[in-house]
Image (cartoon, rainbow, N blue to C red; front, side, top):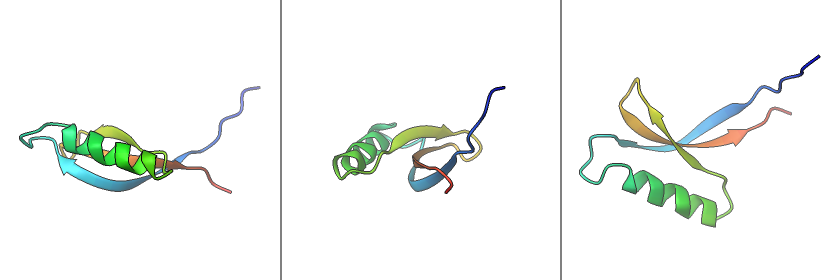
Length: 60
């Protein structure tokens, strides 16, 4: 029997997808957060047309 673990995401910041530099600002922000020890990745928020910087949080 397979088990699954619920995973929650916290949005740390967002940038508009229509910005002049595309995802660069989002990627730079995520890289800075990772350098500080926060595992951050960029995902596309289609509903709001935004780049979202998210981190995973596991429930305890």
